[in-house]
Length: 216
Image (cartoon, rainbow, N blue to C red; front, top):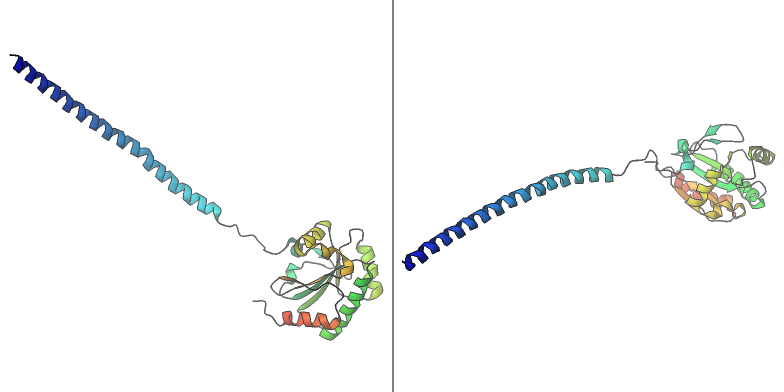
């Protein structure tokens, strides 16, 4: 009798264990399914996010890659004509920063006069003098160029333009006695020349290679 009791008990315990294992496995499977759903949704969300990030990381094309001062309206004191450097790109432009009180600037500009004679008249070349002394104005510069017969483009720089020139080409471009000059090639690239007074022949040797280049 006891033997039958133990056998029956064993069968009951085995049945309970099997049922418990089955229930546990089903719960685990259900939990796995439930846990997988957020992962899948998360993956979908991440894919969408990556696309958005990639789109936001694309560089924004600016309207112009040139310095701001290229597009700044400038007034030529000789003619009163308003122009920009940017609208003259495709030409070679010789730029000098100066002040009316600077004796070296005067000497350099007399060499520019001789240089113009050597070069001759050209439609694809411009000389530009920029007065970078914040204490000087259009009236003073107009009198200076008229007195000396300097008949190319002359402008008075604004404070913002002065700061940008210093930032782009160095603070010595704000030191007129060092006779700072640069060449803007046909593509708009600025090429600083050596400091110090340049003879007409030196200027010609610097300018001619750029005149021979194509803008394209």
